[in-house]
Picture: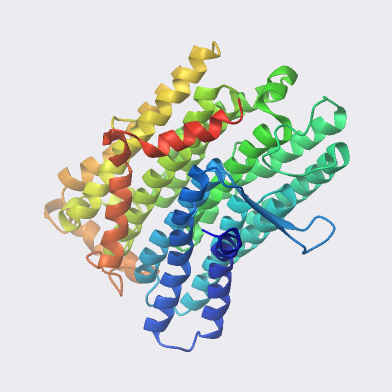
Length: 507
């Protein structure tokens, strides 16, 4: 492929959803079919272009470009094997979730605004994965966050506005911290480029301040304890597809930013000598245990998934903070593992909530009789979260454990095991009661069924325009469920091989 053509195509990975979002808002009075096709095309084109990039990368071609915009730094993109891995994950989930969302948001009078902002947010996420320096990263990171704020307050209720303002406050804090850190690094090293090895070579108070700023910025986005408190409310109040976009993609931009800071700004060997990453090991462990413990007592299904996400992203931060190759590989692989697992759980949760008209786990007895396919997929994702082989999370936990033992920290293996038991405690009972609980409306559940109908009517939930049997609902759920374990059954786990190649460049 000609280099000029490659440059143009890579630009359209970001431009397509941005242009699609703008066009969708302008065409809001057009037919539903036209708008749905626009949404699909706007997310499919970036996926196709990204898939074509693998060939040039394997041949060792240099995929980077700086545009003379916003001087003096300009906008730049750079695609290496690790950036390709993240970008492929983002564009894949952007496409799959957009298909599901088209069915989920039917009947919503403000759906056009939702999809316009969703496409703009996706464009920002893709820009983060493509960023060639931290200035470009910062611009797309902030744009993505502002678009997600609009998604959080979509319903325009008092509760959603409060959740949105909480998220906005945390986003502004993270943005200021990231901007300050980038300015310090530029002053200290004269560069913000990614992929150049460790830019910082000497420990100094300013370098440490910048490191702390990076951790606040990306720790906030990744919902690292104690910067996590925006996440449960935002997920509970936003439309469910927005929560899926955040969990599968946006949270990962925080983890990816942290990985780039460790590998490209400071270097893993430098941080090992300075000892600056040590506190993150404790915060990540706290996130794993606290998130799991709080998830255990949640009756609201979305809030349980949200707190579980805090624990799961804790695995990623823990692996990166260990500064050991196997652990970092496990952390980067877990970015994908968590996306498939949590994406499946959220999509299944949306089908159950819309189908049964309730978000309370205690009211979902017998859901497996009404929606057997959905709950079977939910159960498979639940086993994935526990870490059962051959599912993806087992592989990531294996490498995290190897890294912890290599660093002489066996207690961290205990943290992972405790987390697995807690995952089983708060996910598996949902699946068990779905298939073996007494369905609502049978025997002693008659009064509960009447209360359920009244609650669903008050919430405006229930079947409505949402059909769990629709291919736009069933196919995304099925695809993500297969992705939870398919790679572990292959002779060569190619995502793991990509991860290992990407991580090896840091060591």
